Image (cartoon, rainbow, N blue to C red; front, side):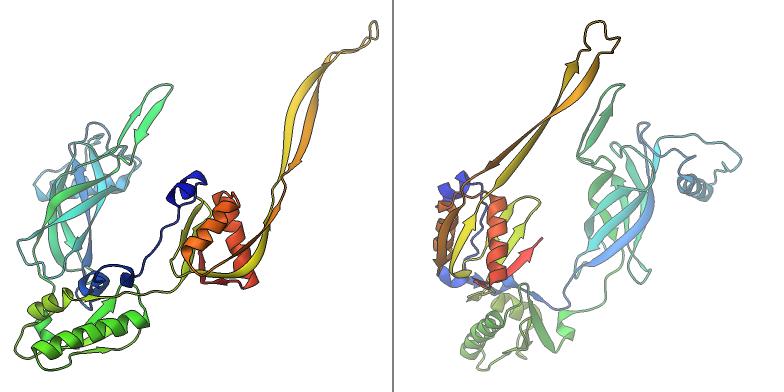
Length: 369
Protein backbone atom coordinates (compact mmCIF):
# COMPACT_ATOMS: atom_id res chain seq x y z
CA UNK A 1 0.00 0.00 0.00
CA UNK A 2 2.87 2.40 0.78
CA UNK A 3 4.25 1.89 -2.73
CA UNK A 4 0.90 2.95 -4.21
CA UNK A 5 0.91 6.09 -2.11
CA UNK A 6 4.36 6.99 -3.40
CA UNK A 7 3.45 6.35 -7.03
CA UNK A 8 0.47 8.65 -6.88
CA UNK A 9 2.20 11.28 -4.70
CA UNK A 10 -0.31 10.90 -1.89
CA UNK A 11 0.96 11.58 1.59
CA UNK A 12 -1.35 9.94 4.14
CA UNK A 13 -0.39 9.69 7.77
CA UNK A 14 -2.30 6.98 9.59
CA UNK A 15 -2.98 8.08 13.15
CA UNK A 16 -3.34 4.73 14.81
CA UNK A 17 -5.20 4.62 18.09
CA UNK A 18 -3.26 3.42 21.09
CA UNK A 19 -5.40 0.32 21.37
CA UNK A 20 -4.03 -0.87 18.03
CA UNK A 21 -0.70 -1.90 19.44
CA UNK A 22 1.32 -2.47 22.59
CA UNK A 23 0.24 -1.23 25.98
CA UNK A 24 -0.97 2.12 24.70
CA UNK A 25 0.66 5.44 25.54
CA UNK A 26 1.98 6.88 28.76
CA UNK A 27 -0.21 9.42 30.52
CA UNK A 28 2.71 11.88 30.69
CA UNK A 29 2.91 11.89 26.89
CA UNK A 30 -0.70 12.94 26.29
CA UNK A 31 -1.31 15.29 29.24
CA UNK A 32 0.18 18.33 30.90
CA UNK A 33 -0.21 19.57 34.46
CA UNK A 34 -2.38 22.66 34.60
CA UNK A 35 -0.37 25.68 35.71
CA UNK A 36 3.00 24.06 35.02
CA UNK A 37 4.02 26.01 31.95
CA UNK A 38 6.70 28.28 30.58
CA UNK A 39 6.53 32.08 30.73
CA UNK A 40 7.51 34.27 27.80
CA UNK A 41 10.18 36.94 28.22
CA UNK A 42 11.14 39.83 25.94
CA UNK A 43 13.81 42.49 25.91
CA UNK A 44 15.42 45.16 23.73
CA UNK A 45 19.17 45.18 23.24
CA UNK A 46 22.14 45.84 20.99
CA UNK A 47 24.35 43.46 19.04
CA UNK A 48 27.88 44.79 18.51
CA UNK A 49 30.96 43.60 16.63
CA UNK A 50 29.28 43.14 13.24
CA UNK A 51 31.48 43.23 10.15
CA UNK A 52 29.82 46.18 8.44
CA UNK A 53 26.42 44.46 8.33
CA UNK A 54 24.73 46.43 11.10
CA UNK A 55 22.08 49.15 11.08
CA UNK A 56 22.63 52.40 9.21
CA UNK A 57 22.17 54.97 11.97
CA UNK A 58 20.49 57.42 9.58
CA UNK A 59 17.72 54.96 8.70
CA UNK A 60 17.46 53.48 12.21
CA UNK A 61 17.33 56.39 14.66
CA UNK A 62 16.42 54.11 17.57
CA UNK A 63 19.77 52.34 17.14
CA UNK A 64 21.61 55.67 17.40
CA UNK A 65 19.62 56.62 20.51
CA UNK A 66 20.35 53.25 22.12
CA UNK A 67 24.05 53.60 21.35
CA UNK A 68 24.12 57.05 22.91
CA UNK A 69 22.31 55.89 26.04
CA UNK A 70 24.62 52.90 26.48
CA UNK A 71 27.75 55.02 26.12
CA UNK A 72 26.32 57.68 28.48
CA UNK A 73 26.05 55.04 31.19
CA UNK A 74 29.73 54.23 30.60
CA UNK A 75 30.76 57.87 30.84
CA UNK A 76 31.26 58.45 27.11
CA UNK A 77 29.48 61.42 25.50
CA UNK A 78 28.91 61.22 21.73
CA UNK A 79 25.81 63.38 21.48
CA UNK A 80 27.57 66.05 19.42
CA UNK A 81 29.37 63.54 17.24
CA UNK A 82 28.09 62.31 13.90
CA UNK A 83 28.51 58.57 14.30
CA UNK A 84 28.50 56.48 11.12
CA UNK A 85 29.24 53.08 12.58
CA UNK A 86 27.90 50.00 10.77
CA UNK A 87 28.92 47.35 13.31
CA UNK A 88 25.93 47.64 15.66
CA UNK A 89 22.31 46.52 15.35
CA UNK A 90 19.19 46.94 17.46
CA UNK A 91 17.51 43.62 18.27
CA UNK A 92 14.58 42.10 20.09
CA UNK A 93 15.52 39.30 22.46
CA UNK A 94 12.91 36.65 23.30
CA UNK A 95 13.03 33.58 25.54
CA UNK A 96 10.83 31.09 27.36
CA UNK A 97 11.31 30.80 31.11
CA UNK A 98 10.74 27.11 31.99
CA UNK A 99 8.58 26.22 34.97
CA UNK A 100 10.42 26.07 38.32
CA UNK A 101 13.55 27.66 36.85
CA UNK A 102 15.43 29.14 39.80
CA UNK A 103 17.94 31.98 40.03
CA UNK A 104 21.27 31.02 38.50
CA UNK A 105 19.93 28.62 35.86
CA UNK A 106 20.47 29.39 32.19
CA UNK A 107 18.02 29.44 29.26
CA UNK A 108 18.32 29.86 25.48
CA UNK A 109 17.41 33.15 23.83
CA UNK A 110 16.48 34.18 20.28
CA UNK A 111 17.82 37.43 18.81
CA UNK A 112 16.01 39.17 15.92
CA UNK A 113 17.04 42.34 14.11
CA UNK A 114 14.84 45.45 14.31
CA UNK A 115 16.57 47.79 11.88
CA UNK A 116 18.04 47.42 8.40
CA UNK A 117 20.98 45.22 9.38
CA UNK A 118 21.79 42.64 6.74
CA UNK A 119 23.32 40.02 9.04
CA UNK A 120 23.96 39.34 12.73
CA UNK A 121 26.76 36.87 12.07
CA UNK A 122 29.82 37.46 14.23
CA UNK A 123 28.03 39.81 16.63
CA UNK A 124 27.70 39.70 20.39
CA UNK A 125 24.65 40.70 22.40
CA UNK A 126 25.29 43.32 25.06
CA UNK A 127 23.73 42.72 28.49
CA UNK A 128 19.97 42.85 27.96
CA UNK A 129 17.30 42.59 30.69
CA UNK A 130 14.39 40.28 29.83
CA UNK A 131 10.98 41.26 31.18
CA UNK A 132 7.83 39.25 31.74
CA UNK A 133 4.22 40.29 31.19
CA UNK A 134 4.28 42.08 34.57
CA UNK A 135 7.26 44.23 33.40
CA UNK A 136 9.51 42.65 36.05
CA UNK A 137 13.02 41.51 35.09
CA UNK A 138 13.33 37.72 35.24
CA UNK A 139 16.56 37.13 33.30
CA UNK A 140 19.54 38.89 31.74
CA UNK A 141 20.91 37.87 28.35
CA UNK A 142 24.39 38.33 26.92
CA UNK A 143 26.80 36.50 24.66
CA UNK A 144 27.84 35.75 21.06
CA UNK A 145 25.03 35.25 18.55
CA UNK A 146 24.97 32.01 16.55
CA UNK A 147 23.50 32.58 13.07
CA UNK A 148 22.77 29.69 10.72
CA UNK A 149 21.97 31.78 7.64
CA UNK A 150 24.18 33.86 5.41
CA UNK A 151 23.83 36.36 2.61
CA UNK A 152 26.31 37.30 -0.12
CA UNK A 153 25.68 40.01 -2.71
CA UNK A 154 27.60 40.88 -5.85
CA UNK A 155 27.02 43.27 -8.70
CA UNK A 156 24.95 40.88 -10.78
CA UNK A 157 23.86 38.17 -8.37
CA UNK A 158 23.03 37.60 -4.72
CA UNK A 159 22.93 34.41 -2.68
CA UNK A 160 21.21 33.88 0.65
CA UNK A 161 20.39 30.90 2.80
CA UNK A 162 17.98 30.83 5.75
CA UNK A 163 17.60 34.13 7.63
CA UNK A 164 20.87 35.86 8.59
CA UNK A 165 19.09 38.53 10.65
CA UNK A 166 17.91 36.06 13.31
CA UNK A 167 20.13 34.04 15.63
CA UNK A 168 20.23 32.18 18.92
CA UNK A 169 22.41 32.24 22.02
CA UNK A 170 22.44 28.80 23.67
CA UNK A 171 22.33 29.23 27.45
CA UNK A 172 22.61 32.94 26.78
CA UNK A 173 20.36 34.20 29.58
CA UNK A 174 20.90 33.94 33.30
CA UNK A 175 17.71 33.64 35.37
CA UNK A 176 17.56 36.30 38.09
CA UNK A 177 14.08 35.75 39.51
CA UNK A 178 11.90 32.70 40.06
CA UNK A 179 8.23 32.66 39.16
CA UNK A 180 6.15 32.25 42.31
CA UNK A 181 4.33 28.96 42.70
CA UNK A 182 4.82 25.39 43.86
CA UNK A 183 3.17 22.06 43.16
CA UNK A 184 2.67 21.40 46.86
CA UNK A 185 0.61 24.60 47.12
CA UNK A 186 -2.11 23.03 44.97
CA UNK A 187 -4.65 20.95 46.84
CA UNK A 188 -6.11 19.58 43.61
CA UNK A 189 -3.94 18.79 40.61
CA UNK A 190 -5.45 18.97 37.13
CA UNK A 191 -4.19 17.09 34.09
CA UNK A 192 -4.98 18.76 30.76
CA UNK A 193 -5.22 16.59 27.64
CA UNK A 194 -3.13 17.68 24.68
CA UNK A 195 -5.83 16.31 22.34
CA UNK A 196 -9.16 16.77 24.16
CA UNK A 197 -11.50 13.80 24.01
CA UNK A 198 -14.12 12.43 26.41
CA UNK A 199 -13.11 8.79 25.92
CA UNK A 200 -9.44 9.54 26.56
CA UNK A 201 -10.25 11.52 29.72
CA UNK A 202 -12.34 8.64 31.11
CA UNK A 203 -9.63 6.10 30.32
CA UNK A 204 -6.99 8.23 32.04
CA UNK A 205 -9.13 8.54 35.16
CA UNK A 206 -9.81 4.80 35.21
CA UNK A 207 -6.12 3.94 34.84
CA UNK A 208 -5.14 6.29 37.67
CA UNK A 209 -7.91 5.01 39.96
CA UNK A 210 -6.90 1.39 39.37
CA UNK A 211 -3.34 2.25 40.35
CA UNK A 212 -4.10 4.42 43.40
CA UNK A 213 -6.75 2.01 44.72
CA UNK A 214 -4.19 -0.77 44.73
CA UNK A 215 -1.35 1.31 46.22
CA UNK A 216 -3.03 3.97 48.37
CA UNK A 217 -6.41 2.38 48.97
CA UNK A 218 -8.46 5.23 47.46
CA UNK A 219 -9.67 6.64 44.16
CA UNK A 220 -7.91 9.89 43.34
CA UNK A 221 -8.91 10.80 39.77
CA UNK A 222 -12.11 12.20 38.34
CA UNK A 223 -12.74 13.27 34.74
CA UNK A 224 -14.11 16.83 34.60
CA UNK A 225 -14.70 17.26 30.88
CA UNK A 226 -13.13 16.31 27.57
CA UNK A 227 -10.05 18.40 28.36
CA UNK A 228 -9.16 17.82 32.02
CA UNK A 229 -8.87 15.20 34.75
CA UNK A 230 -8.80 16.29 38.42
CA UNK A 231 -6.47 14.54 40.88
CA UNK A 232 -6.63 14.42 44.69
CA UNK A 233 -3.10 13.91 45.94
CA UNK A 234 -2.72 11.34 48.74
CA UNK A 235 -1.59 13.00 51.98
CA UNK A 236 1.46 10.77 52.43
CA UNK A 237 3.15 11.55 49.08
CA UNK A 238 4.32 14.85 47.62
CA UNK A 239 3.04 16.21 44.32
CA UNK A 240 6.22 15.60 42.32
CA UNK A 241 6.42 11.93 43.25
CA UNK A 242 2.70 11.41 42.70
CA UNK A 243 2.82 12.95 39.20
CA UNK A 244 5.89 10.89 38.34
CA UNK A 245 4.09 7.69 39.33
CA UNK A 246 0.90 8.30 37.39
CA UNK A 247 2.84 9.68 34.42
CA UNK A 248 4.32 6.25 33.77
CA UNK A 249 0.90 4.57 33.65
CA UNK A 250 -0.30 3.39 30.24
CA UNK A 251 -3.70 4.06 28.75
CA UNK A 252 -5.40 4.11 25.35
CA UNK A 253 -5.78 7.45 23.58
CA UNK A 254 -8.70 8.12 21.27
CA UNK A 255 -9.74 10.93 18.99
CA UNK A 256 -12.30 12.00 16.42
CA UNK A 257 -12.25 10.79 12.84
CA UNK A 258 -10.64 13.59 10.89
CA UNK A 259 -9.35 14.36 7.40
CA UNK A 260 -6.87 17.24 7.02
CA UNK A 261 -6.03 18.60 3.58
CA UNK A 262 -3.62 21.33 2.54
CA UNK A 263 -4.39 22.61 -0.95
CA UNK A 264 -1.16 24.62 -1.18
CA UNK A 265 1.14 21.61 -0.83
CA UNK A 266 -1.24 18.87 -1.93
CA UNK A 267 -0.94 17.05 1.40
CA UNK A 268 -3.75 14.77 2.56
CA UNK A 269 -3.87 13.31 6.07
CA UNK A 270 -6.57 10.72 6.76
CA UNK A 271 -7.18 9.26 10.22
CA UNK A 272 -7.61 5.55 10.71
CA UNK A 273 -11.22 5.82 11.90
CA UNK A 274 -12.42 7.72 8.81
CA UNK A 275 -15.27 5.97 7.03
CA UNK A 276 -17.02 6.70 3.74
CA UNK A 277 -20.48 5.50 2.83
CA UNK A 278 -20.83 3.78 -0.54
CA UNK A 279 -20.79 6.44 -3.25
CA UNK A 280 -20.16 6.61 -7.00
CA UNK A 281 -17.37 9.04 -7.93
CA UNK A 282 -16.62 10.43 -11.37
CA UNK A 283 -13.55 12.59 -11.82
CA UNK A 284 -12.31 13.90 -15.14
CA UNK A 285 -10.04 16.70 -16.25
CA UNK A 286 -10.37 19.25 -19.02
CA UNK A 287 -7.11 20.74 -20.26
CA UNK A 288 -7.08 23.89 -22.38
CA UNK A 289 -3.69 24.87 -23.77
CA UNK A 290 -3.10 28.28 -25.40
CA UNK A 291 0.18 28.87 -27.21
CA UNK A 292 1.10 32.35 -28.32
CA UNK A 293 3.29 32.80 -31.38
CA UNK A 294 4.06 35.34 -34.05
CA UNK A 295 4.41 35.42 -37.83
CA UNK A 296 5.73 37.97 -40.25
CA UNK A 297 3.30 39.55 -42.71
CA UNK A 298 4.95 40.71 -45.94
CA UNK A 299 3.24 43.35 -48.17
CA UNK A 300 2.53 42.75 -51.82
CA UNK A 301 5.29 43.76 -54.24
CA UNK A 302 5.23 47.49 -55.18
CA UNK A 303 2.30 48.06 -52.77
CA UNK A 304 4.22 50.57 -50.66
CA UNK A 305 3.31 48.55 -47.57
CA UNK A 306 5.28 47.70 -44.45
CA UNK A 307 6.45 44.41 -43.03
CA UNK A 308 4.73 43.79 -39.70
CA UNK A 309 4.71 41.05 -37.08
CA UNK A 310 1.26 39.57 -36.55
CA UNK A 311 0.46 37.63 -33.32
CA UNK A 312 -0.77 34.08 -33.77
CA UNK A 313 -2.52 31.92 -31.16
CA UNK A 314 -2.98 28.16 -31.06
CA UNK A 315 -5.71 26.71 -28.82
CA UNK A 316 -5.97 22.98 -28.13
CA UNK A 317 -8.52 21.28 -25.91
CA UNK A 318 -7.99 17.86 -24.38
CA UNK A 319 -10.51 16.16 -22.11
CA UNK A 320 -9.53 12.89 -20.51
CA UNK A 321 -12.11 10.21 -19.96
CA UNK A 322 -13.85 10.38 -16.61
CA UNK A 323 -14.28 6.94 -15.13
CA UNK A 324 -17.13 6.24 -12.74
CA UNK A 325 -15.91 4.37 -9.66
CA UNK A 326 -17.80 3.06 -6.67
CA UNK A 327 -16.10 3.84 -3.38
CA UNK A 328 -16.98 2.79 0.12
CA UNK A 329 -15.14 1.18 2.95
CA UNK A 330 -15.09 0.60 6.66
CA UNK A 331 -11.42 1.33 7.24
CA UNK A 332 -8.52 3.43 6.02
CA UNK A 333 -6.95 0.68 3.92
CA UNK A 334 -10.10 0.23 1.82
CA UNK A 335 -10.41 3.98 1.30
CA UNK A 336 -6.79 4.40 0.20
CA UNK A 337 -7.03 1.43 -2.14
CA UNK A 338 -10.09 2.92 -3.80
CA UNK A 339 -8.43 6.31 -4.28
CA UNK A 340 -5.28 4.73 -5.72
CA UNK A 341 -7.26 2.55 -8.14
CA UNK A 342 -8.69 5.71 -9.66
CA UNK A 343 -5.16 6.93 -10.45
CA UNK A 344 -5.60 10.36 -8.90
CA UNK A 345 -3.11 13.03 -8.01
CA UNK A 346 -3.31 14.84 -4.65
CA UNK A 347 -5.26 17.75 -6.18
CA UNK A 348 -7.86 15.32 -7.51
CA UNK A 349 -8.07 13.49 -4.19
CA UNK A 350 -8.65 16.80 -2.38
CA UNK A 351 -11.47 17.70 -4.77
CA UNK A 352 -13.10 14.28 -4.35
CA UNK A 353 -12.89 14.38 -0.55
CA UNK A 354 -14.50 17.82 -0.48
CA UNK A 355 -17.29 16.63 -2.79
CA UNK A 356 -17.86 13.47 -0.73
CA UNK A 357 -18.09 15.58 2.43
CA UNK A 358 -20.64 17.85 0.77
CA UNK A 359 -22.72 14.84 -0.22
CA UNK A 360 -22.77 13.66 3.40
CA UNK A 361 -20.98 10.37 2.72
CA UNK A 362 -17.76 11.26 4.57
CA UNK A 363 -18.21 10.22 8.20
CA UNK A 364 -15.44 12.43 9.55
CA UNK A 365 -14.48 16.01 10.20
CA UNK A 366 -12.91 17.70 7.17
CA UNK A 367 -10.24 20.31 7.98
CA UNK A 368 -9.00 22.51 5.14
CA UNK A 369 -5.77 24.41 5.77
